[in-house]
Length: 158
Length: 263
Image (cartoon, rainbow over the protein chains, first blue to last red):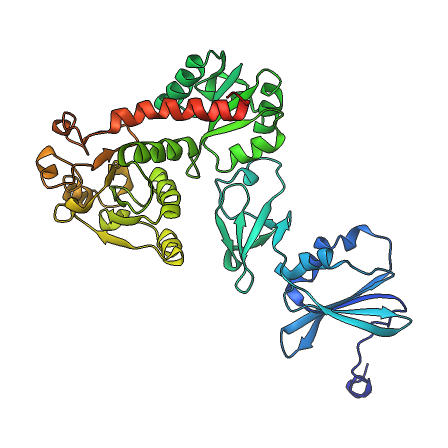
């Protein structure tokens, strides 16, 4: 293949538009699979396309996810706020963007994050983690069980 | 029928609870050391609690893992009393401390509380401080540099708008105290043994130091004491730690009655 031919290719994202569903944009590229996991997208039959390592002025490298035929409740979509706080949602109906939404860190987090306290019961037994969000800006989570604080720096997604 | 499940040993707390149960006419099943039970065979806390809650009307438990009692309360069919979950909470101790303060001072409001000794790792002092913050207390923290009150608790007091002062010695200020709450300074908490040797006698309360203290002042200690309160203090009417232990039985009787609906 000659170099010149490649140069002539238009720079265009080859992820097709969807007729109805949700587009999640501005996902940090390194957290794409965490978002997929949190929303359970790996366990559904709907058509999903995603692109990753796309250039982004805000994030450096971003990912985008297009999900056909699904609209999320705020409660569900806010669960990704820990890993994709700048994510923007475009709600698509008949190929048109009918609504734009942003994610918001919820007041309580269940089963997404790991408690950073190695002596917490959630790290010993099969217990779903539960946190109260005590700070939304610099995310800080207070464990429902051991009452210790897990901060953004030591946040691990389960 | 009450189960006392002590997954780690604790003589005083267990005896205090068992005394409270017996004085109320209750019967006890349980263990004082998990090594002789199915836990040592690998049984989960989940299974132990779900099983034992069928045998009794209430469970008193002490467990080394933090948050274990709250978890147990979510899966148990009977009430759970937390008798200590690792470094997290020991609520019946805090309640008996509050009762002892109220009983000796006639009130909980506007008191000057001296917390002395290991303020870094001491679970009882953290819980007592949080509890007393509801009644406009002033705090004096007296500890060696290595065992100072952690930053997070000072931020908590700042946010609550409460006054606190930090000292490394308390002989000059002792006259202001309403309550002196002593704790043990343990050798193993020091990274440098020389540091321990330097401070080990600074945090020992002696009878001669109590001359200028308020008549109403009382000395508390969660016990066991080693040498941080000299035995010459014991005869002073301001020494209250053994009565405090008795208050522990009353407090635990009250907790049991409250949970079982006994009036």
